[in-house]
Length: 470
Image (cartoon, rainbow, N blue to C red; front, side, top):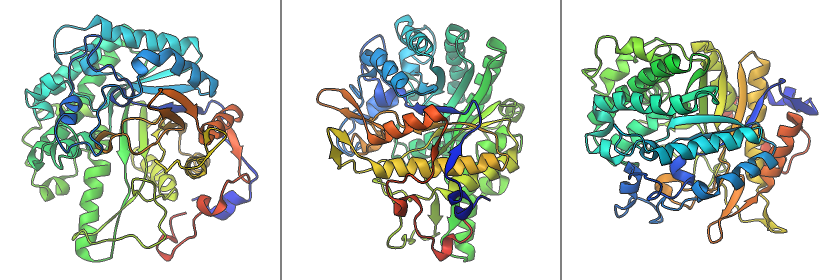
């Protein structure tokens, strides 16, 4: 594994020819215009109206107004020198009832967006589902209902038929673990349910939705690549006690293997299914074969690692680096994760499809946010990606989360992940210092190691517990 010392010996890091530099967003977080263009309410529109659900009481009705400003936004992406742009397509904008008639006005928006991107020399990387289920389908029991997986395949077909001639890679789902767990078990995300049984059923139907949509994509766009995007949060036990190790083991299986294992043909971790008292009754003959059809690319979303104690008593040591949402900053976990994924699955290719950090953004010079903390976060993680590539992991690109400050789900507009600031009074887009740095890194396909805004942030002091992490 690449060490701090060996990386520090280099004055410059360069990535392989063709390495993809880009940014990511999602429809509900940036589009706005939720009641225009024939779009129907999503589960997030309804969730935002429920008192106490969103930290600042906001909603996504205007968001970043990308629906009306997409041409200017594409011009900005081009100005920043990015190769690719990952965005999501809104199911309730394309098929308002979840099933049935296509809304031509809604699908036309994505038609125009893809054309605009291609005209600017930017590769479109669409994701078919980033959490905004049509409320009409939640009224039919949402992802707990197997029919929603089948409806998703029909929706995927409609989108692929329209855009397949201009899109080379299709991503089915974004972070199905978050959809099932946060939406159906903890209730912190839409639709706000709190039953483990619902979450387990939803998890299987999300996996099935990926598989069914994958079959349609293979049929309708045989030359395109099939991808899915999963979030990974490496787990470690707080102590060596049996209960903490067991808790970390099952949490790791549920959060980090529950979706990738079935896709790779390994099935669900059976002992973890037993641990969470899932009887697998939703799994029908042939489902696992549908789910495990080969993919061409695994998108990896990574933000942090987690330290697990069975009694929830663990508190991080004073001085632990954290972002503005309290998540630990630990770049070596990304390098280790990439190597472990490659060793376990041998998928043809990986891409970092989300990586970024909400930061205070309180320092401003000459009208621009000087976000050295975010800049260093991105750079630290890119060092880990570079090291993984050097060790043979086929990582083909890095997409920063996020292009813009945006609606951060249950947190509202408080946390700001963007490398571009949004002035919500005027909707002006103002690139931050991190955007300038990222643009230059994309231009030269790498960066100089020695030019650090703050080396202490870049390489935090190692602690005893982290001896093997780098």
